[in-house]
Image (cartoon, rainbow, N blue to C red):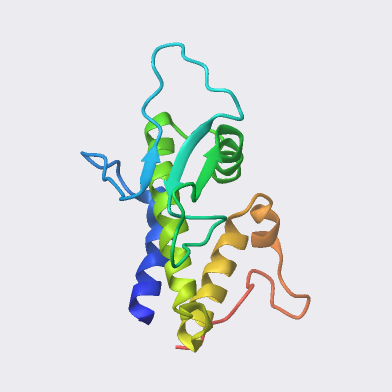
Length: 159
């Protein structure tokens, strides 16, 4: 159970370093948008990802036909802007596929209570630290060192 969560988190963290796949994988229940036609404008309120069977971020035991999660262009652009404002189109398509899978898989994991295991809590803390370290302003963090630390050293690891 913990291995599954570890793989999910590490896959998400490694996403930005992965090469584009040769073929676009399909995820059941998701409908990522097709590449835009030449000069077609998508309005900020238009749906770019629709996940059938996921209601308000949760998979119900008995979904209704109108149970779906819709990600608008504005929502997706906000996510892209937070990750990498210069993200190429091919990477945005990969992100859309991965994001829809993450929404579904993370809900399944939470329904099983995986997030409450000690192993999962440790991995979540580690992943949080990684993300916080990579946010804008990280250059200031790299220069930071405690006043008690010797010059040129910020941390010491025991081996």
